[in-house]
Image 1: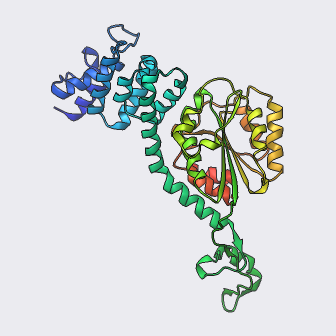
Image 2 (image 1 turned 30 degrees about the horizontal axis):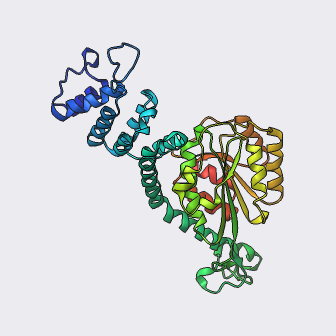
Length: 380
């Protein structure tokens, strides 16, 4: 059988409309049935409706089937589609369902949104799913984040008496000594050295993560919780984590356990960014050594003008303010363009950031590089 025709047959779903004329058998036929259950029209013409029904055992078997037929990345997409298209949210409250699913960030977001209605028998299964995803994210992101931040802290501490040749910042040293250029020898005499100081044990930066926990920010909440825990493990940083909707909750004391932290969030509800920023201002004790990261789609339900004034006040005091419209793999979500433009006008960048790019963003912020320039370089 032509492999291309086989794949088209699986995509198009069979019947006279597929145009391939290919028949399926064995594993291909079972795979086609799994796809049909989710994406088929169920004999309803244009009204697309899957055939999984409302039976938890049947859905659990289907989840087991697709894990056998498709790679994990495809399984995660199909699970997400099943939850959205077939309204399977209620079935996720049952332990046998949670034991059958492929854990991923989107599933964790769904479970966190159900936190208050999870029955006792499903709660431990839900925690196991969340813990598995968190541990995988930590394995993927922890080393890169700690290395990027530690390196940036070393580089950001300047000294005019570097102890070793390896500690000399040659670019800055050359720029500082250009007046000592000797044309005949084609060289610069380094009258003044500029180098990197060695790592200090004291806190060098305050980092405040302020996270919008409205429903559309679910993946961002998950990634923020993991990154917050990693940053909090570094002695050179004083890390705070605050989540908000119309209320503000400080979860800093949960940063040692990101699973508990995530279960302390409450996805959904309204948004009062102004109130959240007001609270976070009170956490900042050293403005010129502080990084404030607001993670929000900027749809403000509070007092917009006051929110903008607070951001302006923070930047004027020396706080480095960064707004992430999303911290996820999906890119920029729907967001309030007027508020983003107003922030940009005062020099505060607002953009979406992927988890893989976040460590380098933190390094750039610690070194006080031009974040707008950093964003442009990421687009290339």
